[in-house]
Image (cartoon, rainbow, N blue to C red; front, side):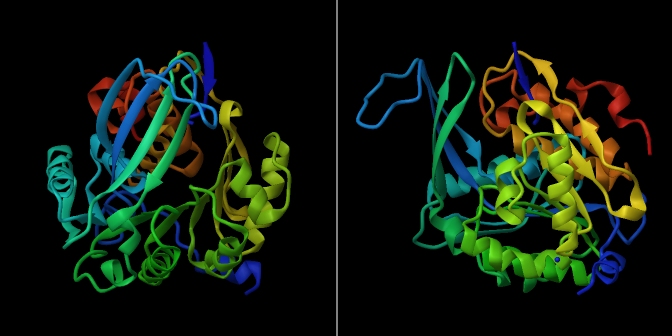
Length: 344
């Protein structure tokens, strides 16, 4: 069995400015807006991840829908969230298929743009059938043309939004502009820093952390931002506190098999260790996105950060027991009913 977690002004002034998720039904709406990428996944299941110069045959192949932003949107929608996707796809057939996929999943597609003459982004994924580990190469294509105006100048894109979710899979200027625009409108902003930013990008991110309500790095990304070697819960707390000093209100550091370190603002509770769940992992692709999308849903319904993370852990743990990315995500009916009872 595998253990799998599915798993910046003065500080006081910044924390006062950061938004907390409003209680369910408050703040003029409950929409979860996701600004990010849409990729087609091409997945080969293999006995081992190929080494440089090596050619291997695959046990099987699958084509599906992916991209970190889209994955998080679909996961939240499957739980019942009112989800609005802001993204760019190509003018090819894959772009049309992706919009149809969103509609089937109940995701609002009014702000998904098709860029003429460009192809939709794709990801080439190999999955080790023995360990469930993967290796991924992404070709952003149309997603690489995502601009700040795609969200900030889209009439109605943020209307009625309670939460904005961003990742690091579209151009960074677009993401940072979106976080600032949403923050200034009183919207709780979530920034999932995967894929890991370069050192130069980290320096560009830091001044914008004052617009981030919740940042979600893994151990490696947390170290890039703080210089702290994150190896366990205690070092994750230290890294989270260092990030908070840069301006961010809440921090969740994912720790792989060790689970996650949840560090709310100093006025909102103590650090919590959400431990990984023991499951038989089949395919870990998209598990982190399942966690973030689920967490956004539960926050939108009024759960505290620690409770939302515990619940999201259950959703993401279930996703690794099936093959695929979005196709592995559980629907509300497949999850314990107690996840959807009000709890603070």
